[in-house]
Structures are given as C-alpha cells and as structure tokens.
Image 1 (cartoon, rainbow, N blue to C red):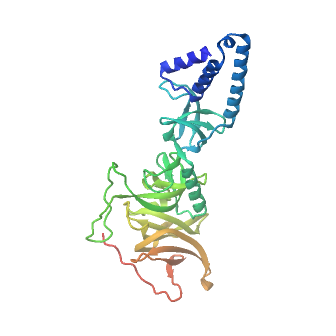
Image 2: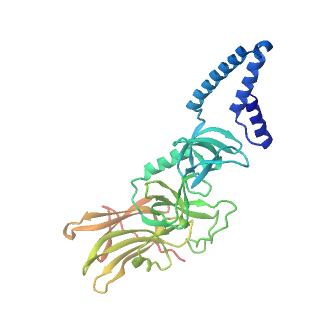
Image 3: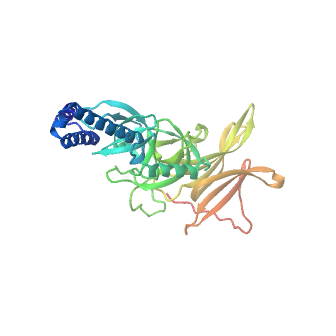
Length: 376
C-alpha cells in the first residue's frame, strides 16, 4: 500500500498525470483499512482479509479494462503521429499511428486523447491529429457517389495535399496524398479564400467593362486517387498531365479537360486525335470552360492541326465521349458538352468528327446557335 502511495506521491511531485483509476484504487485500499477494527488490522487474519479484498477488486478491474470503455471512434488525419505513455513534458513513445488509421478513444485529458489501436497499442495522442466518424463517413459517401465518374483529365500533385470533404482550406479532411501522386480529375468547384490568406491576382472580367467584384475565389478539383478514394484538393496543387504534343498549342490558356477521340495510322504507329476544353488561366470564373478545340493529325506533314475551334461557351463538366453510327458515314467519334444559358439552364451540345471535319449534331427541332465571343 505504501509503495502505491509513494509512487503516486512521486508522480505528483514530478508534475506527471496520475490516471484516475490509480487514485480510485488507493482510496479504496485506505477505506478498507479504516473500516477494519484496529486489533484486527494488526493481525495476520486481518492482513489476509485485506489481501483477498484487494485481489477481488483488482480482478474486477482487470475484467473492466479488458472490455474497455470506448468514448468514440476516430481516424488519424496526420501523415503519422506518436503515441505517448503519459500526458507530460517528459514522456516515452509507445508506438506510432499512420494516416487514415482507425482508433478508439478511451479517455481525454486537456488537448490529448488516450486511444487504442487495431494492433493493440494504447497511448496518448494530440486530438488535433484526429477526425471523427462523421468526417470518415462523409469521405466514404463522396467516394461511393463518384466512384464511376468519367475522368476529365489526369493530374500529378505538386506537394503533399489533403483530401477534403468539401472545397475550402478550412474544411474537414482525413487522407493526405503524397507529392507526385497521380490523380484523376472529375469535377471543378470554387471556394472563397479564408481570411489571412494572401490574395491571388484578380481574374479577368468575363465581359468588357465589368470588373470582378465580391470575395476572392479559388478553384478546387474533385479527384480520385490510385486507391479509389475521392475528395477535393486545391487546384493549384495539381499539375494537369496534358500530352506535350498538344500542350504546346495552349496559347496561354488553361486545359480543363481533354479526351482521345480516335487514333489514325501514321507509318508503323497510331496517333491519337483529341478534343480539348480550355479556359482563361484564372481562378473563380463562373464556368468550367469557355473554349473548345479539336486537334487532328496531319498524316502528310506529321503534325497536329486545329480542326475545330469554338469560343464563348459557358461550359460545365463533365464531358462525355462516345461513338455513334451515322449510316453512310459509319461509326464516328462523338462528344457531348454541357452548356449553361443566361437563365442558368443546362443543355447538351453534341458534336461528331469525321476526320478532319467536326460538326454539330442537332436534335430534332433544334436550331443551331452560335455563342457570342467574349471580349478580352
């Protein structure tokens, strides 16, 4: 008994955290001793009774600890974090947990939580390295909802990047993707920059004479990584992996999406032909893309040429690419764009390519319209 009391005294003098269960055990020991008559306390029979009482109590405690009272389930959001044996300035590392790992929270103290891992480790971790079940479930739902979305273009991460549940720097995130990781870009969105973040260059006005107003916005990509996980990343953290053969024709514009329409033979190789969607190189624009280009391969000159170009689109992702039978023309590659009108209504615009000619495919009763070219 005196050994336990002394140990606790040393811990208190050292300024270390004393687990509440140890204090409870010591209190019960004192209580049992005080309840025993003084003559009985000094006899062998008295000490035997005390030892049996303590043995029964510790046995019950052991059963309780085996069951573990779990407060909640959490997940590690840091790349990795150390588990401590105690909450103190001086501590020992008892293990390490990694990004995405599931843990059970057993108790909390200050800004720390004592957790139990799937491998059986127990230790203290800073709560800022954990996210709750709601965040995990949100990312799982996002993954399920977009697991079959068509890829608009591939990308490569410039730096380590968090996978957010919604667009925004301060939104919840769980997984962290490594620098150089390859991702599939699915959608685009914008979010307001948070206070304290340095402002980016203002986007060019979409219409002549109208300066941009309101909060500064930045672009976010919805991406899917090589493990099939889906989430939002800051667009400037992603380098779009456009083939160099067509990237050189960007003319200062930003590639938003590109697709292979078909391939044409040139000697002993086959060369892909592309449809590309582009926009001005600014964040926060009210559309996903406003330019369309189709690049076909000139077999005689062995180079790409622009077969079709269209400006002034108020385009929205995703873009669909397929094939369709056009009778005498045969099976031709087809791509379908989603375009928003001034009232916010989204309609489809279908195009076909019979190399090197690209034409609109009008639905029955549809009248061809030509978007107005935006002034710069």
